[in-house]
Image (cartoon, rainbow over all chains, first blue to last red; front, side, top):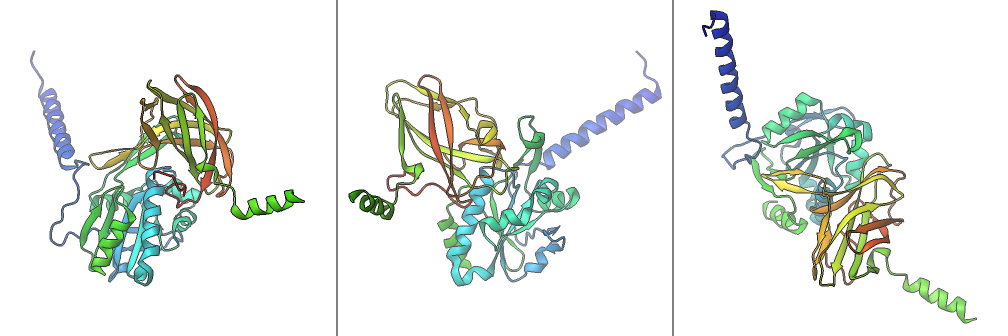
Length: 197
Length: 157
């Protein structure tokens, strides 16, 4: 079989596409946790419930306790937000040195369902942010976290979200300090924070 | 004359919370059935419960039903390589001699299609269907959104 130049070009393009995809899969490994490198400073720029754009720079000088989730999540998200709320209560007079932030990975639905009412039901200090697809992807990539919409005919609206469930701690100068794995007791998070404040 | 006094005393002591009562079917003990309050009925609710199998034969929880949800399903939160997802669980094993907890971060009932807002302090019935033991209906106590479990003196969580 003889290939025309055009066919050769097509095969070459297909080969390149496969290579590019393979590289992308390797580079975009969703399981890669953030590394505690020097001056790893994740960033975000997302609107709050009132539509004001909030960025990490707004909270300079505070510790940030960051969580990515969605409000239709029945188990993981309420459990983690409950722990965050407990930490904020237990911090007492130090609470104003810590800003807990909930970034929606399901922003369109969460804005419709009401983000502020949800976060404040756990604790009034928790700030909910919900951007558009581009802003949300950018924040997730900056934090090296993974989220994905999963079609599920049985779920409300026909989909659910899988996502990195850890809490991330950002220091007052914007440095990524550590993560708390999902299920870390509130008392452990509290002790860690107290040792830093 | 005694009845009003008794009633007054009882109201002072307070009845034990629903989630702290124990229900049995066959060799299964059902305890600590609780849920979290919801804001409205658009988001799914959750069901947690503990099941102890005091018998010598394995059983399994194969289904849940409740009038407050059009589509209740068993799910399991699974964290794989740092990513949490919630696959459906066809059934929850209840091995002989063991206690299985539907608890935050693991197996849970996902109550989709809520017919009403779940309000803190209220309750609703749930019918648990076991492969061998059959069906049992128990009351579920709705705790606050921040609750991490019922506050029972004998609660294991």
